Amino acid sequence: MCCARRVISLAIVLILSGLFIIQLSLAARYIFRPEDNSVSIDQRDPNVNFVYEGGILVASEQNENARFVIHFDLDGWVPDADSITQADLYLYHYRGGNYTDSYTIDVYSLTSAFNESTATWNFPWTAPGGDYDSSIGNSAGVPEEWDNWVSWDVTEILKNRWGNVVNCGFLFKDPVEDTPPPDGPYVRFHSQRKDSLPYLEVKSTYLSGDANRDGQADLADVIYIANYLLKGGSSPVPRQAADVNCDAYVNLSDVIYLANYKLKGGDPPC
Image 1 (cartoon, rainbow, N blue to C red):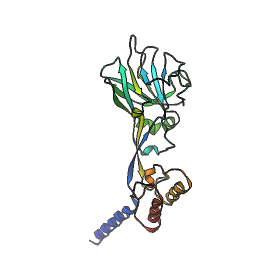
Image 2: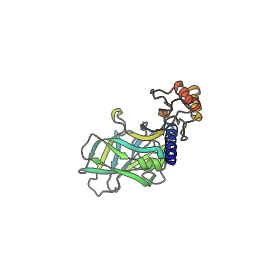
Image 3: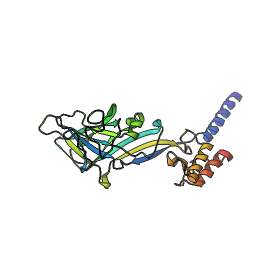
Image 4: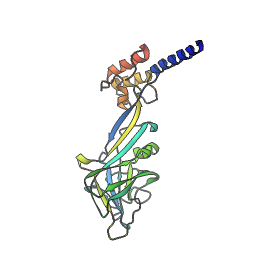
């Protein structure tokens, strides 16, 4: 009986101790826009830049294929790849033809950077049609009907090819290409209309109070948040991680709250 009581007491102590050291992993959602950096590249006119076209195009026709490239400004965000739980790239489909039901389009990460004002089928790539990593990609079906959002799951691309995505962007293409004449399939997506711009949605987990993203909430984070607020230091990653009192703001009250938690046994980050 005495031994059993000791075991139960030890279990209670461990559970209570755990309440003070375990912090919840929370979820953050980010929306990124392409910052006007997208353009079609067309095999029919391999040296022509199509930045002033009304949209971005994928098409398949023998020796007349079209692809497009797009880059999102991730605003210096550098997540831990393991923290990314889902990433989806959305495009608004406004025109298409020469296919039934749906048209499959592939997406890959680029391995060369581009400028939308100068990019063509031949430039600036080492291989015509764009330099991309074909080892990790994904596909989505674009419906025959127009005027709808289409999304591609790019989670694995972001987790495994983060550098490519940040520095270069994405390439979209027909998975087969070179459809025999007379007319191959094509789809167009908005790239300039403000109400239907492409966007990248990324969901990731974070630890409340871990503003510097080192895996723990400690005094280094108190200093990090204070430097951010008072000296223009780097922003917390994500910003929500610094809102330790959950009042929807990041300010000096969060610095005081986190310092009290670490130094005086105050309430833990929410």
